[in-house]
Length: 233
Ligand SMILES: Nc1ncnc2c1ncn2[C@@H]1O[C@H](COP(=O)(O)OP(=O)(O)OP(=O)(O)O)[C@@H](O)[C@H]1O
Image (cartoon, rainbow, N blue to C red; front, side):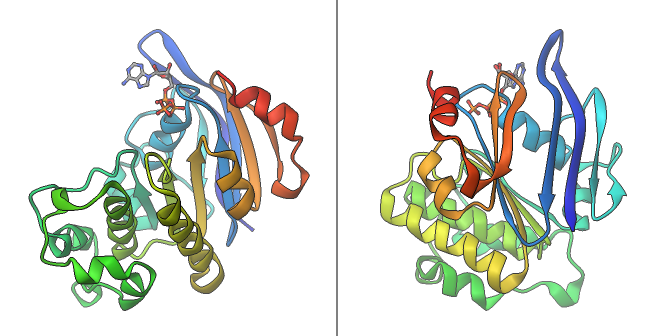
């Protein structure tokens, strides 16, 4: 079953076209990765999904409902959890307070931090009282994922989760995403430049270049030389 369906979307920044008829299908309970180098439109695609930026053509539907012009907070309430590029954690708030910002769209009864988040990322538990700004880049990435999970999403959308992060934490993040797919039934979409990470954890892979999708298919069926060609600057 398709969880998120993106059909022929265009996006413009003024006169510049960033996305050209992009179509992506994210199947339920699978990890979909969109690969591409800097500036090809990966973040713009995610901002279209989360409603941060408007599209100029095409349509996006989630769980069968057209998203139309619904604002980001409504999409979050529908179950789309977003982990933005650069983490965007609050540096002066504690780890616990950062996690609690995920309560905003939740019913009172749901306002708690699910314990499994600390099982996935034990470092967050040991640093609950520390300021977000004191954490390393990798710890901040774990916090940003944790915060998105607090919103109890059906789907997680991540913008370059491995960017600037040391290999051991990249492995932890990969394991966490597989756990969320396998044990929590989540649908995951990530955009990345890191080919090997995507090959290891993704089920389906899209390759993007200059605002367009150049390849789509199962991760097991990648034309590696062709993909590498698109990833080279
Ligand atoms: N706010 C903006 N105003 C104008 N142009 C923008 C804006 N944001 C992105 N762009 C342009 O749109 C294109 C796609 O950018 P986007 O950030 O989506 O790419 P990306 O693949 O996510 O790259 P990166 O990895 O650097 O974030 C680029 O040419 C970029 O310069």
